Image 1 (tube, one colour):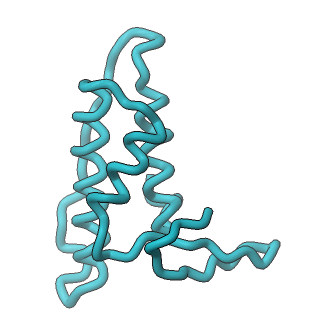
Image 2: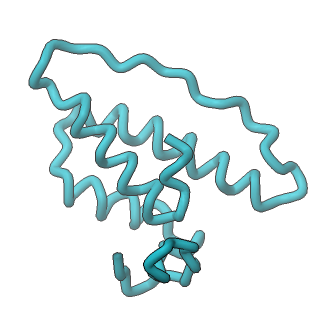
Length: 105
């Protein structure tokens, strides 16, 4: 994944791949890019923003002296089949992958 205004993150994959991740200076622009890529509706967007902002806040705290003092987000997403629950998870996963944290979901 190559993103123009981003910092490099070395991914220790067996294939020797290098993952390019967003810089921490533009997380909102990056969140918006992923939202547009996944074309989330209003309800999906609400869930995406809550989860993404919690993830980015936790990521920020892990990079400071406070290291992981944020409480984990616990949230239940419900709805009948076909309402886009998996689509929202895929969008959040794309954000986490771009930061090299796909294991966090």
